[in-house]
Image (cartoon, rainbow, N blue to C red; front, top):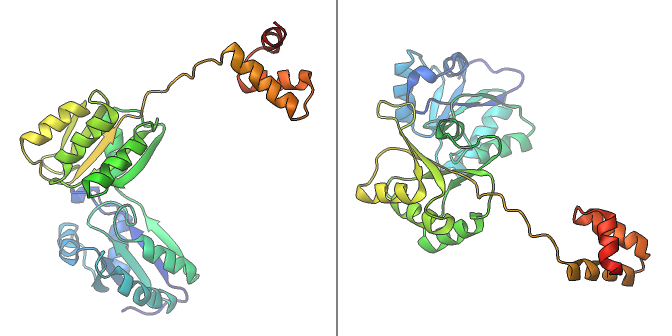
Length: 282
């Protein structure tokens, strides 16, 4: 390792999704100067460094789902000792459905600085390419693997009005799309992004039912990000006269004056006070 600095730190590296040309200048600089580089796949890191014509002088260690619990305290010790540790996954930002959260949390708990050299993200890239609303969205990561748990989760998400971004593996995408079409409706707009930034990048913008049929015809290859339109906003039915009278009566029974009760009910249902007054006294 290089000369120890006064304060160590953890740097999260946003790695290219597929095209090495998307790598930032900062990512190159950090790879060339970090004391330790923790990589989800050390072979992929070696290929990336070769593609970027960068020499990695620091110690390279593996950091993936199978060893992150054991390796996290080791890396924190290195950071606390004053060295720089860089964390890189196979693509995109660490911690986003990839290893990283455990190390970030442990470094922060140890009082160590944590920063990032931000870069590509499959979540925002697929969202931007989908042609679906991007102003409000939520990220679901990978759906549950078991069919029962997946269907239960999708039923809970069916009324979500924000655009959804979901990761899925090629061998489960057909079943996932079938369950999505059943839970959300076959006509719900969606986009399936495959192999983003790579030679065979493909974005299919079709309703869920059509995507499910497409996936069933043959197992798609490559990493898949699915973007699904949110549920249509529903306009609540206006309250009936009996409901308004009951709401006013309930407030009166709780001790409010009729005047205050009518005002409160009119505000709650976005109605004119005069209209509620007329209904109550009719």
